[in-house]
Image (cartoon, rainbow, N blue to C red; front, side, top):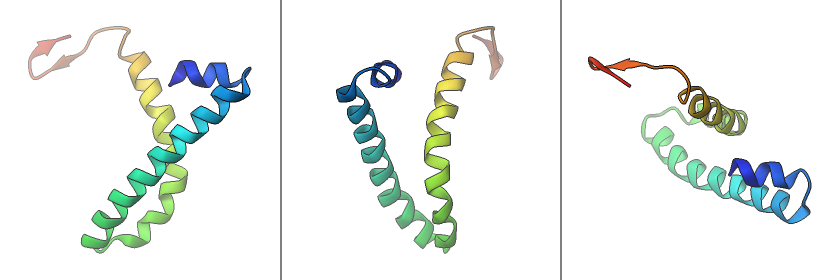
Length: 79
């Protein structure tokens, strides 16, 4: 997706494709999370989903890139 976003800065087709993929992601996650929030009686928190969705994409990209550098320890194993 990151390559499509970069291409989207220069090509109208890839820009629309990236926005469409983000919209599909948001719709699917809203459908799932709204049911969970209703079940847990926390539906009032669903309003933050609009803010959290783009931040989630940035977070995943950052952690994915940052995880490529350095090492980590998890459950006694070094990666």
